[in-house]
Figure 1 (cartoon, rainbow, N blue to C red):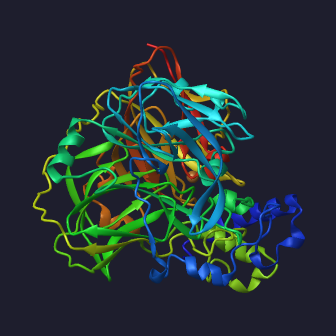
Figure 2 (tube, rainbow, N blue to C red):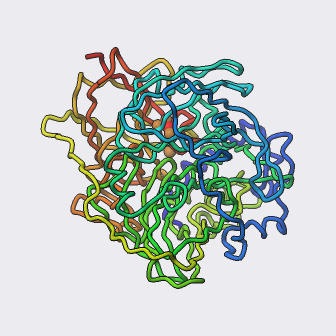
Figure 3 (cartoon, protein in one colour):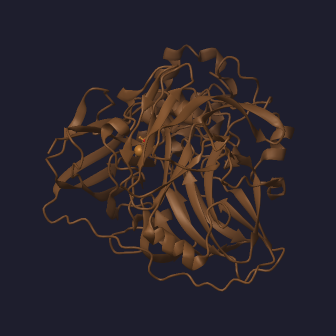
Length: 566
Ligand code: C2O
Ligand code: CU
Ligand code: CU
């Protein structure tokens, strides 16, 4: 910590006092505590209850992981038909905290005589689908199919949000290659709250390459090919979700202190000593994870086989990776060589969250904060009005794996997975973006989101190379593009904690080597990406480019761009 310069600190501190004064919150600030919590939320969990849920304590991992399966339920696997199918966004009580019922939101689908909640939709490349969103909420919503190449009417642009009781019909052909995509709400200013309260699911696309991989390793979706949706949440004493960010938490993003995987708190998976596939989505609003699988203090090497937009050309062995909100990694984990009874953990390791300036600011700005000595000595990184007991960048467990005896298994990991044609950038148009803050607002090229206006227009059917530069006095921003998958060309100015992960002379890390729709840009970093903006749809298209820290997105760290018709 304490890497923040005096100058920057002063700037942020100035901003904060203005905001607090404006909010008239002077009297409620004592103790950096729980101010501005929404009415109607009961108190945060008492310490004793929290101790039983704290993911730092390995002994808390006792609940069987909810593995997505065919046959319904939460995250049940559902083959999407070509015929219209109703997807209703509605309130539901759900079992998240063992026995307590949690008021949440879910996408509900009735199919095969059963109820699916946030189904894992499965489709083949080339299939046409026709989901109908029914808005059963009392506020506007719209579904965005994250990572899919669809025309803007099917993309869930916020201007298409429909009010409570209304519906929206989608109909599109799935053009993407096999991969782990996902879907979630996208109404302007309330995306974060709706996603946090439960609206999110996976969208798995299948094709020949993926089938070949699964066959050669005898992988079965829902059995040995396991989607893992990582979400951190805050709960109150009754077991309900708490979402009531104050201004600081709005600015840094909301992090929780209870870990859910596929809606299961502190889960355990009993695994055979064979090869497993884990498709991991960071479904958190704002938390970054530095993932690895450990046995004791040893990191287990895993094979990275895919990223946001599907398979890599070949597996690449890694032992850790950062996963920012909305990013996916596809991993093969070889448990042969382990013994029955061995215990492993998927965990998030310590890292520098690189936004200590905000925490430092909260310490010195509060009436009691004078003794903290500026930026040093802060323990909580998540902002003064956060109720989270688990700081951003802290170490904690996510999933416990216990190894049991194996059925005979003698497959070898293929050396070739798929093809990945590099985008030809020889005639590319260059464009640059700067990410920065002004006041309590995050900006893209100095701009805030405006529903009807685009920041730029691409030329017709042009390849562009973007350089996205994050200010030094900033925080990490996972930047996401609608409409197209892109390729990462280069990283410059990366923080020291990325150094061991760099795999080539362009400064890229292993997770940069596949198709991407979301790329994390660290403070001080410049990331170059290539995008082929060929408009394969009819008419102009209006898409967004935004930060996928959902509080940032809602706060306007988003811009429109327009694709001309061809
Ligand atoms: Cu997953 Cu516009 O977002
Ligand atoms: Cu998206
Ligand atoms: Cu951001």
